Image (cartoon, rainbow, N blue to C red):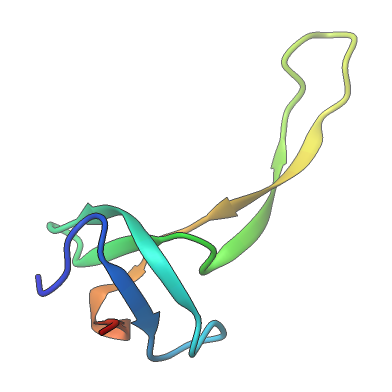
Length: 72
């Protein structure tokens, strides 16, 4: 992999093309990286206790390493 955790990268493809973010985690076996603020999706979370309501949270999902480039 040409990038590692902590690198600042630019997204080259997809809906977040042109965004800049920091790599939070790398998954070398799957050739994917988790970039801060990129590929966010709304996920429904179940309630923790019986009396509370569930919530909708925004979560980052990994993107393929070929879609990012190190920012200089």
